[in-house]
Amino acid sequence: MGNKTALYATHHAMGGKLVDFGGWDMPLHYGSQIEEHHKVRQSAGMFDVSHMTVVDVTGIDAKAYLQYLLANDVAKLDSLCGKALYSGMLNHEGGVIDDLIVYNLGDWYRVVVNCSTREKDLAWMNQIATKFAVAITERPELAMIAVQGPEAIRIASSLLSAEQAGVVASLKIFQGLPAGDFFIGRTGYTGEDGLEIMLPNDAAPSFWQALADAGVAPCGLGARDTLRLEAGMNLYGHEMDEGISPLAANMGWTIAWQPSERDFIGRAVLEAQKAAGNSPKLVGLVLRERGVLRAEQVITVEGSDEKGVITSGTFSPSLGYSIALARVPRSIGSHCQVDMRGKQITVEVVAPNFVRNGNAVI
Amino acid sequence: MSDIRKELKYLSSHEWARVEEDGTVTIGITDHAQDALGDVVYVEAPEVGSRVVLGEEAGVVESVKAASDIYSLVSGEVVAVNEALQDAPETVNSSPYDDGWFFRVKPDDLAELEEALDASDYRELLESEE
Image (tube, rainbow over all chains, first blue to last red; front, side):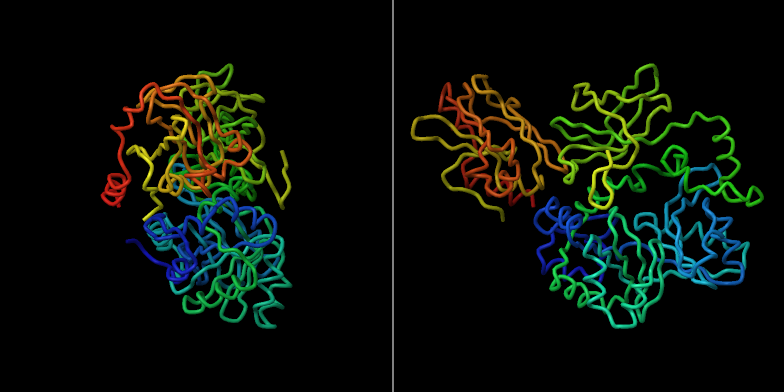
């Protein structure tokens, strides 16, 4: 029996198949993960993401602290209240402690980190904070519901107050703002448009029910994984961990090298890696025949003794065949061989992105 | 508790067998198995005319979650394969004992089925695994 979100009883009542996820009892699916996946791409689905960790950063050194803590630069967010960015939080060896989203709310920031990394992230953030005039405050009283898909914003807005709906209507992609008791971000982990709504725990069950009554499909972790993988989005612990550089995890674009005077944790190691230019890289793989690519399968690349490895693999419901993300030698060409249950199967190498806004991009 | 059919025989690896009127044996996976696997996406069945052997891998069922070997409860020649599963693998989930059958065998010796579990043994096995 693990931790339970405010929606635990609701998931039970709706037929959720509950499994352990990082010490939490979460729904894997409510019947068919493939059907849930299609609902998100075609209309609207919702996910209980209350297990994720919300941390507010306040104090006069909040910006300077985050500029040191994170590989991406929160100064990019100065132009718009509520603007958010995706960043890695690195250790001194340039490995990834976690990936996260941070929102700039003017004189405070909100950071959302993963569930399974909660203790070590908080310990690290607090340790680094001792050198800055900041307060780090976790917000466990907030539940979080992600509503995703082409109909998601329309349906969710119809259930909000006029004031809240007004805030939602104003949101740009990757912007989040307080709206009444809620905090609503136009963000997501599916490759579709949608919202991630933080709300008081007490309000979550009735809001979830209202969304379900309005036609939004409850979706579990199974669909969450196939959706994010189709969208080329990393999952901590798979594409990266403390021993993996962001340069090897398709996170190079999240590193703000400029201004060069900005020191951030891990910068020196990253600069050396960039200069050496021989980090492995993260690519996409496509298997257009029968079979499912799976994490940890070993990859052989022509012309290299170094093996690659699949970091995440699945069957793609939207494409109808198997896709994967893989960390491979930089010299990889257009194809490679994957050891699938003892047989070497040739697969196609693509950029790590497969479906966006419902359409195949490969 | 998942659905268990009284008239079938079972393996502890969650396959079932049904003896047909003509003496052939139909093989599939149980309701417990399809639930544990989740959405099935591919079924690799043995070819018609090939031989299967009791206790040896006869095919593979792949779900989004995992790949699982399928074992036959009898040795013999494969006389039919459920082609419908190629285009509609989800039938294994929705109808594991009926439309979701995998293949049919002309058995060398029906007595091999005496080694398999009957329905109440299989039920006990599932209860002990819970």
